[in-house]
Length: 206
Ligand code: MD3
Ligand code: FE
Image (tube, rainbow, N blue to C red; front, side):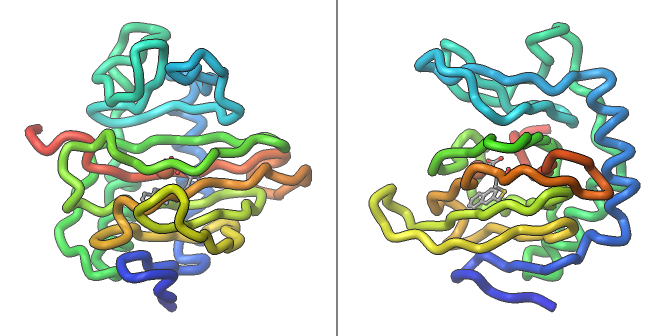
């Protein structure tokens, strides 16, 4: 089933449940080559979320700002490649939400431990906002907040659970969003954490 949270925001509960073990096994492989790390914001505060990436570019933040980078700054090597499995899951979800032909070239992987959160923000580091972003939630549940095009717009909350997929495109693409602090718990698939995958077209020129 598909539930529209807002125009352009299609929520597909449990859509990735069956493929979740394969996704998590691949996350382990990626993290063995590009470890989860807590990066610092341009203001110098370490994020509570551990992050890594796969694909032609990875999202990074440091004293110079937020951007996509072709190499892992911790190793100076390219990010691990994004498998067809990842691309196919994202493409098929995007198609079900009305975005035919979505071909992501980057996967941002967020790892939340209890207490970790993501403050309200927009995703603006991609080159072309006509492409949607597909998110897959794995492991512990999270309360997700979703607002409007202005930071001060009211937000709605929705719990995202293991296997849930959301496609954010069109009028929802630049909406403010965030994640409330994760509550402690254990999930059979991930243990004491939540993993979020976001599939993106980081750059449209390759
Ligand atoms: C709405 N991640 O990585 S996924 C992020 O759960 C991020 O880790 C959150 O926000 C997480 O940037 C939320 C849902 C999500 C992702 C991208 C969006 C919602 C979005 C882009 C535009 C609007
Ligand atoms: Fe985001």
